[in-house]
Length: 97
Image (cartoon, rainbow, N blue to C red):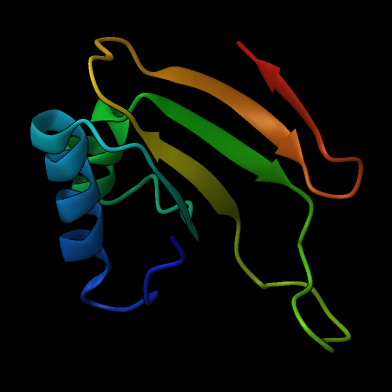
């Protein structure tokens, strides 16, 4: 899922977490890495997995990459510990810490 990057993004993430918890649905979200916000700590750190995107991906016909960092957030059922790692956008390689 690629939610709108505005004021409603928190609601999208809350819904993804709710569905993982109650309906056993896995949702993968591409969002800005806003680690200094309260919603990041309240919602994202309770996910199954966080991958910080290395580099600045370009979408469509863009000539420049995004001006802010991205993270891939995975909400999955029955996960108690959040795994953290990186994802190299250019090389399509992940690593976990």
